[in-house]
Amino acid sequence: MTRFSVLTLDIEEGVATLRLDRPDKMNALNAQMRAEITQAVQEAGKAARVLVITGNGRAFCAGQDLSDAGNAASLDLERVLRDEYAPMLRAIWDCPIPTIAAVNGVAAGAGANLALAADVTIAAESAVFIQAFTRIGLMPDAGGTYWMPRQMGAAKAMGAALFAEPISARDASDWGMIWEAVPDMEFDTHWRARAAHLAQGPSEAYRNLKTALRATWQNGPDAQLDLEARLQGACGQTRDFQEGVVAFLDKRKASFEGR
Ligand code: LHQ
Image (cartoon, rainbow, N blue to C red; front, side, top):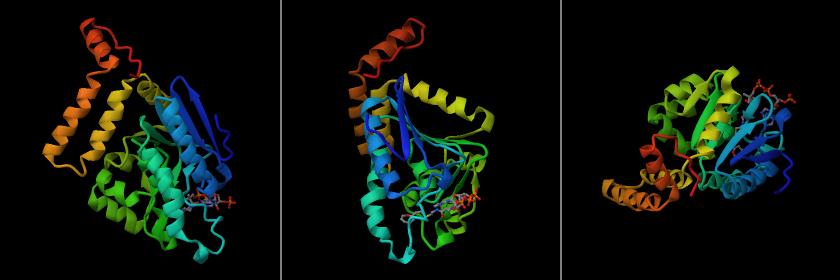
């Protein structure tokens, strides 16, 4: 497995855990971090059954490393977004296994949108999400304008972007921006249990439901019904489906192999 310098990647019992590891910089994203996340996500997608992205230290991720920028005016934002952020976000969106963002602390700017790019976002109650961009004269990027209105609705997305105020984990959960907020004391145990659940689940069904739930934004009902039929047809060919039905009839818990 590749050695990384600004993150760690551990794979155990089907769970890949990617920890952003620049705690003194609140895990801010520099070029090295973006490249390593892209590579680690791709590796995890091949070697594990679920991927968790979390942060070391008190932050999840403070977004773009602003100390990297030097003279901000000379930073080519368009290039950085196209060449470095987009591949990282595509790697997460295209990841064939379920992805969990375990948001242990503040998630700001591109760090907030990194958290939203995961399939499931679980936050510690003390964590906050800040669309911090307008504070430094920018608009949301890193996929925020794509995910925010879809996840929290247009009104909340516009307010979050314009006011750049911290959104508590509890509000984020209530608004539908994230899956759940969890008391800090239970946070680690909780996301590990969630990850273990998915790592023992029917991987083909997960892959296909991700495809269907993403495609729904572009499809009308006919296309979506057609897609469901095709993808469910593929699920029907799996051993996990066989096992699921037999386990149901045997009144026992299914033991999925992930194929
Ligand atoms: C940091 C950072 C940071 C470096 C904290 N960088 N050091 C932009 C441009 C280019 C291309 C593409 O797109 C983007 C997208 C973006 O992400 S723009 C938005 C960038 N992020 C922000 O504006 C957030 C900046 N950080 C903050 O607002 C605060 O630090 C937060 C709210 C995250 C945490 O506040 P506190 O808990 O009060 O901590 P702190 O501010 O004291 O920070 C702790 C240390 O971390 C501190 O360093 P120091 O040496 O003084 O201890 C900060 O300088 C450092 N840090 N964020 N993004």
